[in-house]
Image (tube, rainbow, N blue to C red; front, side, top):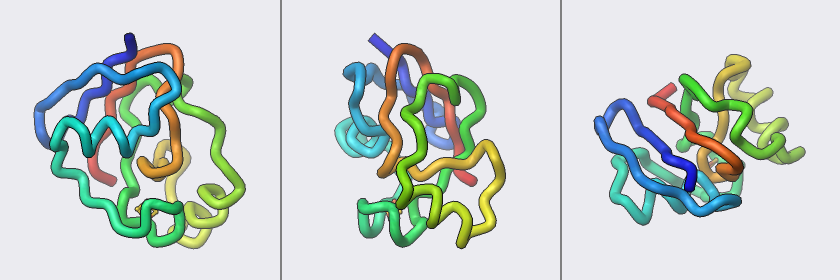
Length: 93
Ligand code: FES
């Protein structure tokens, strides 16, 4: 079972394989804020510190929003990516 760690909260939680990072955060009361939950607003922008290869490919919507935000390569939208196959550690942007 993949483990998700949010550095700001100093908290980890188990994720189901294929679960959205957003769902893991919300189920486990991580303090990461969410807005639209649809990849549009950028509220859930996070920096992936390790395990980026364990996140799903960027959706066209996520790519577009990351481009608008001029995000760095290690940044993702937690409402759009799924945890798959291994552990992920992330922090606020
Ligand atoms: S909550 Fe709006 S982009 Fe993720």
